[in-house]
Amino acid sequence: MIIIPAIDLKEGKCVRLEQGLMDKATVYSDDPGTTARHWEAQGAELLHVVDLNGAFAGVPKNLDAIKAIRAAIKIPIEVGGGIRDIATIEALVGIGIDRIILGTAAIENPAFVAEACRKFPDRIIVGIDAKEGLVAIKGWAEVTKVQAVDLAKQMQDHGVIAIIYTDIKRDGMLSGPNIEATQALAKALTIPVIASGGVHTMKDIENLLTVRHSGVSGVITGKAIYSGSLDLKEAITFVKMNDNRCAR
Image (cartoon, rainbow, N blue to C red; front, side):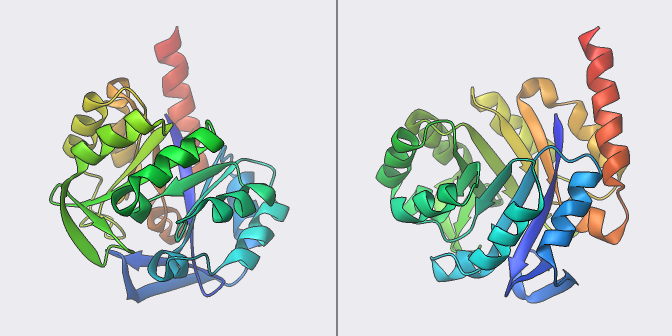
């Protein structure tokens, strides 16, 4: 299991939202490139980037900031937010983005997801954001009637390489991830599930480690590492040590 630091972009700045609400944004930095370098220096092996304005607009809005992040670090980057067509994926891949996260498109245009997986093998991830088990789209502004597990199975069949699962009620609240729902989803799939939302302290990392054998391959953390309630370097070291013990 890997620890993945998150950078959420709003108007070119690094922010964190509470439960996906744009009017509840805390600005942590106005220099995304420097922030990315900091997390890389702490030992991050992958960076998670979300274009929040893009998620609401349906087209990327923070490309300059994304380019600055790519220029600043060497580790792989995954990007989501407002990616609704092949041309946008091509543009992101063209500037060096390694993995593409699709969200709203998975509900509104599953054929696009299948096409993206064919054209960009081993690069496409689907982010499933759920509220009480139901999928939310358009920057979490709209809750559908689709069950998260049903959508995940469909996306797996289309060829995505992983599912990022976010419990909206936990996101940005530092209340602990939804271990049970994350594990249940992972058990229902053959592709990895990455947990997201609610991570607060090292105890949450320890709890997630207990379900990694179910297929939980990573955890995304944002507010906890910005607020200081979780030390990213310490968490990465802890997980690696734990994995090494299990490998013996």
